[in-house]
Length: 346
Image (cartoon, rainbow, N blue to C red; front, top):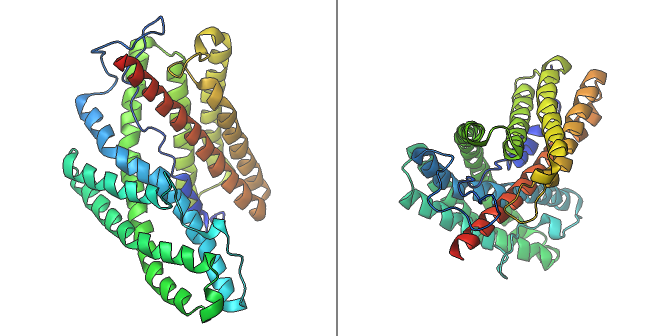
C-alpha cells in the first residue's frame, strides 16, 4: 500500500518528541503523604539509573529543540520559497527560531548544547550516542548565530531593501546545516527511544512486583502502550503496510490498556486522585490518552475509505494528541519529582 503522505516522516519525528520519561519514580512518599522515605529501594537497577541520567540531556534536546525547530524550519522554508518565487511571504513569529528562556531568545538551544557536552564528558560511556551527541551539539552551535541573523533579517524587513540578497546567502548556509542537524536528530531519536523503552519495561515490571497493578502501574502501562502504537503505525507507514488489518490489533491493544486504567481509576478514585504534586495524576492524563485513541480510530476508518486527504489530517491529529499526552505526563512527573525533592530537604 502507498504511504499515507510523503511528509509523514517529518510529522513522526516531531511526534518523536515522544520520550515521555525524563526521570524514574525512585522516591516514594510514605502512606501518610509526608516526607519521602530515605534510602528507599529504587525501581531501576544501578545500570539503568546511570542510563536514565545519560539519556536526560538527549531527551531535553529532543523535547525542547527538535520539534520546535522542525516546525519553524518547515514554515520558514515555505515563506522563503514564496518570497523568492512570488515576491511575497507572510513573515511572523511562527517562522522564527526563537526558543526563549530568562530573556534569552535562544536560551533553550544553548542549554541543550551545554547539557549534551556535559553528558558526553561526565556521563556513562556510550560511544555511539556520545559521538552523535557531540556532532549534534556542534551543528546546533553553528546554527544558532545563523538563525539569529535569519530572524533579525526578516523581522526587520531587510529583505525589502536588498532584494533578498542576504536572505539567499543565509539560506545557502543554513540549509545544509539543518539537513545534517535533522539527520543526527533522527539517529539520536532512534537510539534514545530504544534504550528508554527497555528502561520503561523494567520499571513497569518492578512496579507490579512492588505494589501490584495500582494506579501508578496503569499510568505507566498506558504511556508504554501509547508509545508502542505510535511506533508501530510509523513503521507500518514506512514499510507501505499501513492497512486496516494491520492497524486494528494495535488500536485494540491500546484501547484495552486505556479502558482497564479508566476502570481501575474510577473504582479506586479515592486512592487515585491527587491532593499534592506527589500523588497520582492519572485523571489529568486520561483526556489526552482518550483523544489519542479517538485519533487512531479516525485514521483506521479513513484507511478503510481510502480518503487520502483525511488520512493526512488524522495522522497529524494523532501525532499531536500523542505529543499533548507526553507533555502532560512530563510536566506532572517533573512537578512530582521537584515536590519529593523539596520534601526530602525539609
